[in-house]
Image 1 (cartoon, helix red, strand yellow):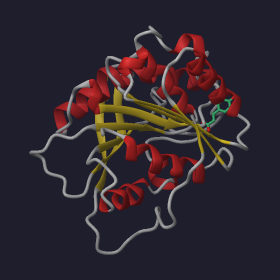
Image 2 (cartoon, rainbow, N blue to C red; image 1 turned 90 degrees about the vertical axis):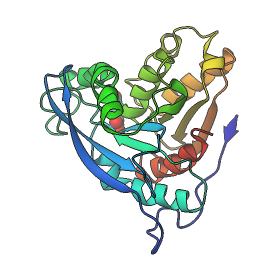
Image 3 (cartoon, rainbow, N blue to C red; image 1 turned 90 degrees about the horizontal axis):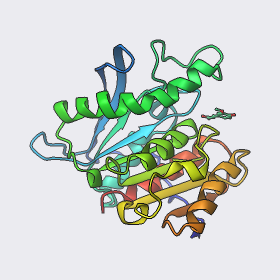
Image 4 (cartoon, protein in one colour; image 1 turned 30 degrees about the vertical axis):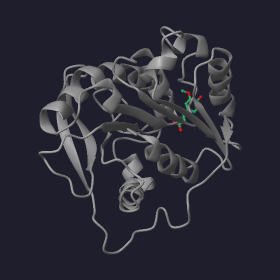
Length: 257
Ligand code: FER
């Protein structure tokens, strides 16, 4: 399905006097990298430590780190507003650092092979270090149908690579403007015949003016050919924040429902 739609006006504008979620930075031990690593965590308005929440892991692009969404994408405002309008299932959102290496800051030549490789290594950090940390330290539900992964550009590629090869861990997957780190479509899904029944949502989107759109389109085409239900969402715009914020707004409304 091709779908063009966009957020309502004011979706990313701060509203006075509504319940607010909270954003904090945490540190967890990564055995994968051999270091302490940072992530940001959003807990929803009216958060209660005695309620169990589904969890979305939301990944950044090649120029970012765990704070990129927070700095450029106003996720807290978008999610608080959605929640206030009764459009969002209460959820915890984790913003990891997807460059799993000792120096994981976005500095120097971001395209160095070692740094690109670190975006692959993140799969192990996520599955073996960060998810267990979240499950020990926050009231998060642990079943696959209560766990989502999404991201922009490099993070979109990671979401497809990691999500589709670990459908025992993720039932909800979103790729916004996926980058060339995306595996070839034929190598993305372990068992294509099982994927349709395991996926609660597979969202693939890209701006129409994005030079990388062929990557997303190739995945969309492959999935369509193989009868894997998904949403193909093209929107006006390029490789940029207005697109990704819009994706966040549209994608999160569908989660865990
Ligand atoms: C590339 C072009 C863009 C690439 C990665 C990107 C790994 C990532 C862009 C982003 O995250 O915004 O050739 O190769």
